[in-house]
Image (cartoon, rainbow, N blue to C red; front, top):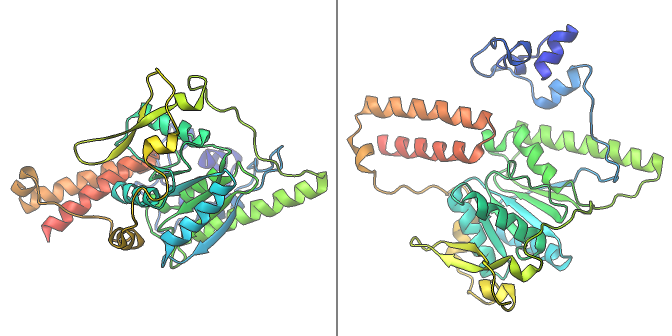
Length: 355
C-alpha cells in the first residue's frame, strides 16, 4: 500500500519498498530482497506524504508506556510485575523466541504460584481459543507465547506485555513485529510494555520512538478535548453460562507436557486453580530451572540427528538449508512467525550437525 501510494502520487519510492510488488501488487518488485540501505518503517512514514495516521482513540487510550530493562534477573523482575497486575485483576502477555522457552517460562511461573499457560503452533486451534478465553475470564493470568500477533489478542484486561530478547535481530523482533506486539497493551488505561534487552537494536529504537511520539500526540489531544482515558469494555466470551463451565482441568501428554482441556458439561466442580494445581506451593522453585530460563540465549538443544539428516551429503544438506531459508522468509513475510521460527530452528539444527 505504501509503495502504491508513492506511485500514484508521484513520490519517489523509498529503498525500503523496492522489494515490494509495484502497481498495487499487480507488478513485479524492483529487487528480489530488501535493499541493504533500506530505511526504517518510521523514516518511511515520515517521508511519504498523504498517510492518514489513525492513532487518536475515542476512548482516549494512550499507546502504552515502555521500559527497557536488562536481561540479568529478568525472570524475577517479571514475576514481581506480574504479581502486581494479578492483585489488580489484570492480565499479562509474555513473548519469547522459541517454543521450548515458552513452555519453560510458563511452567516456572506456575511453580511460583502464577496461573500461566503457553501458547504456540503445536496447540490446536480450538485449544488456543480456550486458552485465550480463559485469560479473559481470569482463569489464567499470563499467556507465554512466540507469535502473539495473529491470535486476535486485543484483550482489554491485558495491562502488561513483556518482550524477551527485544534487541535480537530477525523477523520475530523487527520493527513491525515489535510495534504490533507493543500494541497488545494499548487497550488498557494502565498499559505498559517491558523490553528485556542488553542493548538497542535499530528496530527497538524505531518502535520505541514511534510509540512515544504517538503517545505524546494522544496526550495532547486528550488534554485539548478534556478526555480521560478509559479501558475498553468488551463483553466476555460466552462459554456455557458460568466460569466453571469453561475448563475442567489439565491433561498430561506422553511427553510430559500439561495442557488445558475443555469441560464437556456435568456437575459443577470446585475452585478452578485447585483443579489445575496452579496455587502457590504446588511446586517448589527449582534453581536449575530458574537459571535455565534466566539465560534466554541458550534456548536451542539438539538431539541426535534423525536417519534422514544423518544420511544427507554436505551438498544435499546445503541445498535443504537453502530451501528452508526461502520457506522461512516466506512465512515471515506472511506474519506466520511461529512457522518461521520452526524453520529457523531446523536450519540451526542442520548447521549444528554440519560442523
